[in-house]
Amino acid sequence: MAALEARALTKLYHGRRGTVRALDQVDLDIPKGELFAFLGRNGAGKTTFIKVAATLLLPTSGEVRLFGEDVVAHPEAVRPLIALVPQEGRPFFHMTPREHVYEYLRVRGASAESAGARTSEVITAMGLTPFENEPSYRLSGGVQQRTLVAMILATEAPFLFLDEPTLGMDPFGRRQVWEVIRRAVRKGSTVLLTTHYLDEAEQLAQELAVIDSGKVLYRGAPEALKSTVKREVRLQFSGGFTAKELAEYGQVIQDRNRLVLLTMRSRVRELTDRALERGGEVTVGPVTLEEAFLELVGRGIEEEQ
Image (cartoon, rainbow, N blue to C red):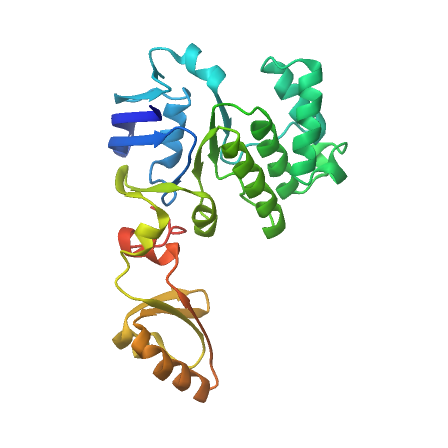
């Protein structure tokens, strides 16, 4: 049985500027015990999907079932089975990381002994020990976010919704969170992850879906999505070439002050030699999930709707 099943899920928002179709006949199954990534730009429909599935928002039409329970008809049966890290959530001002985790577990019905043990375990695993007794207002944004994620992962709920869980964290903090998420999946939780960090989806997800303008454009393994890119290699240039010069060799992407070229292996030696002769720098690597997303959607994941 799938942990989550969505059928013809549609959500319309009505406003002064007209009707926005945030979700458009979405069909999606997420297998039990799997980490599933949901990718899309801001406004693509990811957070709306999570809010509906987590019983926080009513759909316009269609249905979502979690472990066989209809989330609209029986929200009281679904809520004990889920935990949610909301996008851009905030911890309580004066509470410490340890208090956040412990009190949340107690509210969910854990005994004092169980809550204490799980709190200590997740505080250590998330690298929060140096900050565990500091009030939130003294903590950096990244540590505050780790506190919110720790609260949810400590629940060991059957279904975990992680909406941009590593937003604002440094690379070391992100990797600590990744390992705790992997541990939750190994223990049997199903995870639905949304992220703007495509390396995060590539590292964690067994399967993913790409959504754009409320429609699911792709569903499958990350490697299968990368294989859809027509070019074989990725070259990144700092100087040496203009975008116009590179365009004849393949697809050119402007990345801040650098140029990224997707091309064929047969052109690598020629391009690297020319770049070095002109005093530029070049790095060569395989096509990434970011390029696959760009080719599928037409724009990068950081670009707004």
